[in-house]
Length: 84
Image (cartoon, rainbow, N blue to C red; front, side, top):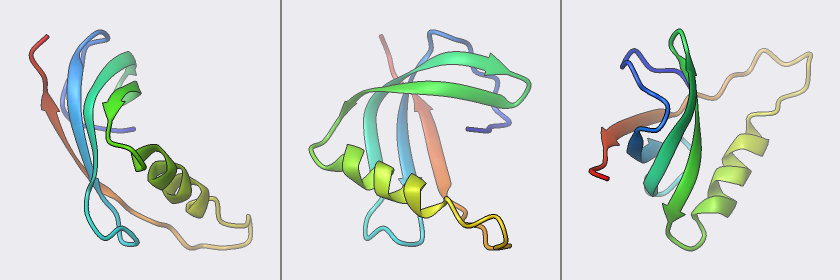
């Protein structure tokens, strides 16, 4: 993921993602920042509602367009810190 917010590994976040093909935002109640470099970071989802994992998988797999395609899919996410 990318963000202009400085994130520190070990920080806990709540994540809400709005994507074109989703009826409602995908919500991850608790995730943790595992790594951060420049404006990119990796997170691990720790707690989310039933069915969210499958919806994220479908969203990510839908982004895998063939190499000849110039199509891109954008998703908007909202990050908020979670008290430990």
